[in-house]
Image 1 (cartoon, rainbow, N blue to C red):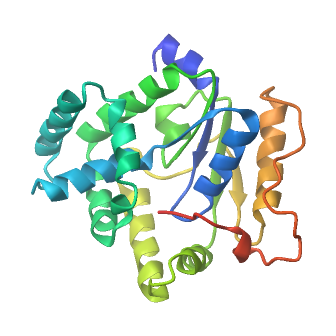
Image 2: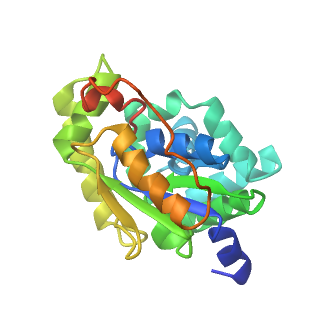
Length: 249
């Protein structure tokens, strides 16, 4: 990373982990509590997979995907506008077809390089940000002052997604989680793994409030703010799984 990138990273909260571990729920809560910008970096890869499928581009062809990326940037006038475009197509980006294609897209080193630069550029205009993904603390912002790695047992993550996707089949979701875990952790470039200095939190048996308590304490310790952790749900009688909404892949 360049000196400027290191300076930016000091104002970044990096949240990594596998699919449906709770990254989005907690990242959004931290972003709102501390007044930081929020970015789900995986949407950039999903957007590229979505556009490749729409334009009949081979998702295993790195050169073709780079050409597609350049075309999209040129047509939108700025790489930062691609994040806006991904939000506009958020529903379509969660389709099973895109979910299958994104593993191929995200393992291509050529594309990871340009998207990493795009994320750093996005963060450079913010006074602070919460960025979630799979390699934020290890590759994108290795100098981030605060790093979290959220995980949970595959069956727990599958159940959370199943409870939020009422028309989905539990076994298919579980199979997809196992497939994504294997693809993400075994790729040669930017594999899914916790940074050496990240706080690893197994959310399997924890509520959102409990996870956020751990995360807020770490943020407070490095000076982001000194407040009580953000409250997600005050009804402590609810089950652990029922509190995990918006869990994603």
